[in-house]
Image (tube, rainbow, N blue to C red; front, side):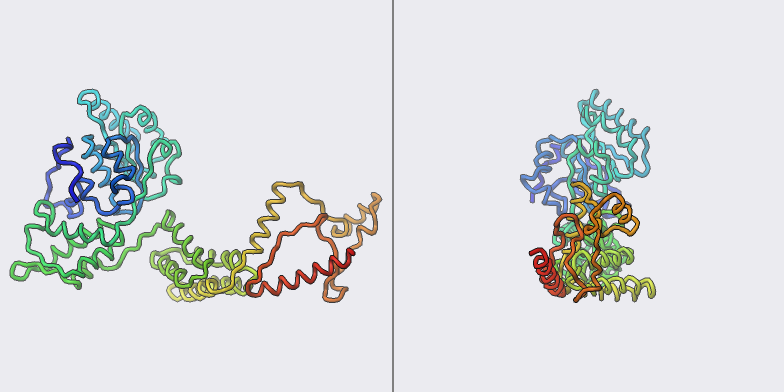
Length: 450
């Protein structure tokens, strides 16, 4: 694919490349055409691409996992729109530095008629006061703001800043998009290893790309380590699959303990259980355990799911989930993962019913929206009955019927001052027996009224 912008169209010139720079830094894309992946926002006709081509954007926020190209994309935008590029870091920078960058941007705008892209990495680390400093300058267009974060900005960035920005999510770079990046690094004479003689086994690059798990920086770093530590034979560096395995070692699963990956993965786990797919549920369980998720958090969610999703269709599911939680506390890791897997498969393959969960929700909604119903006289405590009797209440209305005195431990009796039905049993699993029992009770109730 050809570059959209020729060097003459950008006023930003390439910085001299130092051989001491890491390969990932040297291979940083200079044009949109060199960016690996992200076609969901950079393909022809997409909003962001159109905004860059037309040079019509003000404030942008990029969020996504590490190594997906947030900083790179900000640099490319500055280059292709002929803007100055200034950067700050949310961990290290302060209000004085922010104001200094903005003053410099104002000066360049006045003297050279040149816009400035102010890039702030880890924008979520700025406190409210720091983020608020930016707002008036975004309003006036003093700088073109681009923020980057690994956290969902709708939760971790102040809403006034988000509302003034276009938010774009960057995805992990797919394996097929990483392989051409690695091949370009090998052949590029200016920035990569093009001056060296290198032969590469086909599955070696595939292994690096796959184990990088969507992180372009990690893939390039592994390739650099492989090339620079492999002794040449007759002047040729041979990269084999074995060398690739050593260079990238263990796959680093994209996961954050308090961000999108955490919530998305546990959501997929619970929904797989609810959807009766044990294979998917086990995969998401394995991912969480591999990434270091707190197993107690997983156990708590299993207990919740046992009642919310399986419920009365298989009441033993709750027992299994609680037993798995207690077993984990007793034996710990790594064996503690086994009862968690046991509970996961049991819940995923059990019949499903959310009837009790939905019934409680309906009852709570009635309490929130309507008048609170009084407790019927016959259900009140003895003391409350005596007070009611003293005030002239009907004695018959206070006659409580003790269920255990009747055949089948049931006698028709109202327990609400008006007829309401919240629980609607399903015919799934054991709950069908409950449904039959309730229907029999209802018939007896109707017979007593007639």
